[in-house]
Image (cartoon, rainbow, N blue to C red; front, side, top):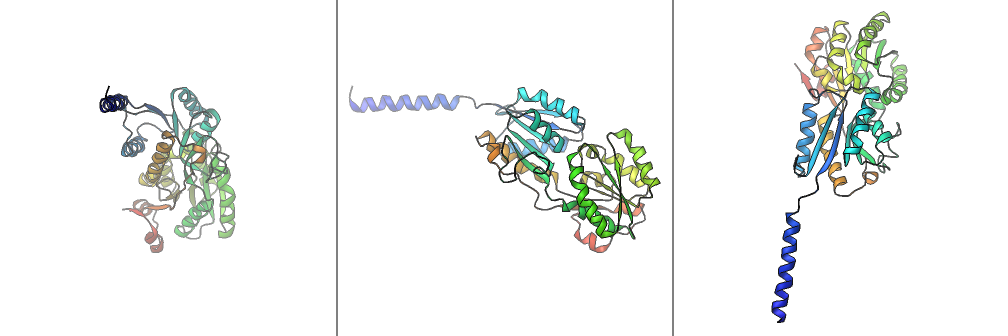
Length: 326
């Protein structure tokens, strides 16, 4: 065989081989997505996650399969869902601190990305923001305890002569344990007495608000938790009925009638989380992907609720608001 013919045969074989490789279907990654809310409450979140992944080239049924699981915001329920997903997935996405801790406990062999977990270092989820270690990375919803102090200060700006403020929290939520010391410090500086009120389910709400009334609370600070996120509308309605100005972590609670919220924009967390998922699929280890945290917090004020409470929002506070509902 002449050399020219030999080269032609070799090149042709190589091109044919590449053609076969190009025709091979990409590996389909199975991604579990655990959300401690109802499917209806999570619709915008799920769509945003799917859209961000699509922007990066991941299409449902072509190269990824998303297994969405919605559950009650109770630790045992969340653990049950996480445990059932672990054998089925290549990667896990979880929303909230309790779900993230469940993943750490039950999914040590599965790369995991958390979205909206507060204080991930302090609760023992990761080693550090820069070097998470282990199989977990993600997007922190809050990494500075001073934010809780700012929420109390906002209530103090709104409520003249604030002396007694109820703090609604979920004792099983890691956020609560870390939030209270900073709140105690702020309350002492502002001369405000805090009235802690715990709930573990929706059934506890009536008794909780009765306790606030009995203690003569003048305002309500709602700490972040998966449960209070789900119960945002009920809490906002009860606060309005009790004539209690309320400050929340989640903007959703203000949209449905709460007075004011200071918190990270959940939608803004999804884009960087999708980028982390992309890195893991391409071979990066979660241990080496830094955990990101909010660069700013959004202030949302509901003027309709302020009017119903016969409150005047200070002009300086209105000027700082990112969103005003009229």
